Image (cartoon, rainbow, N blue to C red; front, side):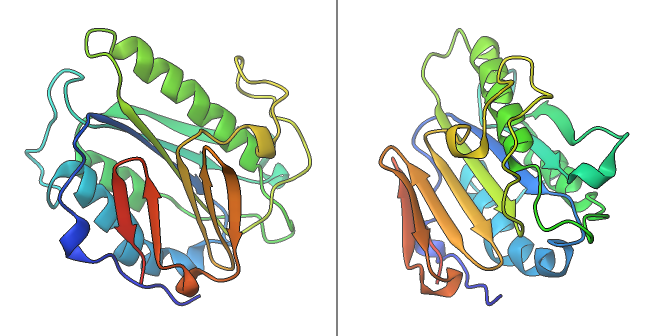
Length: 214
């Protein structure tokens, strides 16, 4: 995988309060690529939503600023452990980065697929929780970023109570961005659009978000 970088000129920050959920494959299949993804995509994206580099003193207040959620999904060989680990929402970009840095990237070596549907269904549940938290704010910009290096199992989700039975192809939130080592998928209101190689993707726009990826 050859990763590019986001151009600083477009990193001015969102014009609307955002709910941001990262859904990350926690297997060893993604581990070798994660340092590059972290440097070139994840940290620039977080800086965009935070309005600058994460600092230990950064907090968005009581549900008034950007809220971050993290979902880590695995493969079926992680049983009897849970297929998905979910962190409660935080308004601290610094804390959010620390969660991402703590991912172990273990297992999955004997599996050719991962439980993407489980991860996305939990992300949908998180967005439902965000909506309840932000009743006094009204509409927020919802962004889901999926990072993976394995295709999904052809299995429906079972761990999310509200979204049991959903498969990967109908669980993706309407504003989402998927980064993988071999292929990039942009998912929006017009559906998922496969890109033949990540370095060839010039830009992604989701509503008011413009991220330059080369």
